[in-house]
Picture 1 (cartoon, one colour):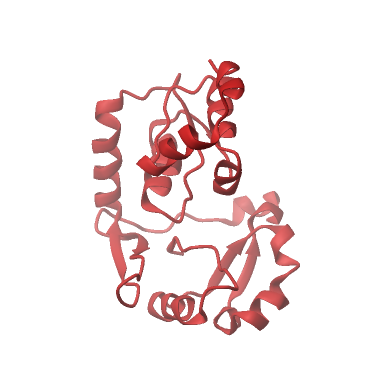
Picture 2: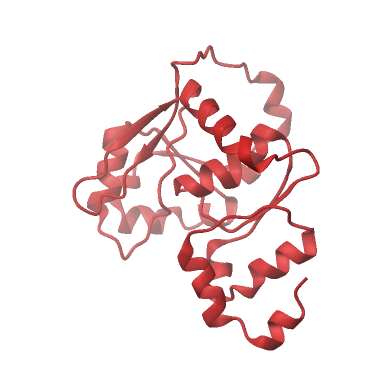
Length: 197
């Protein structure tokens, strides 16, 4: 199984982009959570390219199946995942990222920040974007430090939640694109700022 980070499907988006990614990647399955699985028929009706995929609710996988898993034979040149371009100017293109490349990027990213087991990452970055996937999810796994993840929508709706989470969980690291900091300045009230560490 090769992970293919993709955007969460939106009925407002045209099916062509999703169909292009599914076809290009030769996707066989879709990972979701049980609460979303109940709406599968509705999603497939509105996004026909999702039909034919095997759907797996990751929060409902039986843990007693773990002993049946066997590690795949992988090396540095083996494909770790496909990262799709935004497709804003043309059809999204899959960029093949090898395990060697991924480990190099994780090591290179980790070096200047001096993460260790005491570090605490607090992030809302979506994992379908490379910054959220690499720095927000895989970075903490690579180095072995604690990571607190929150929904991107929770941040967009009330950006103070991000800063409160940093305070509440003792966040030592976080990252975001510039718009996030501008969003905080515009939306967080002075009374809310006063309660932050």
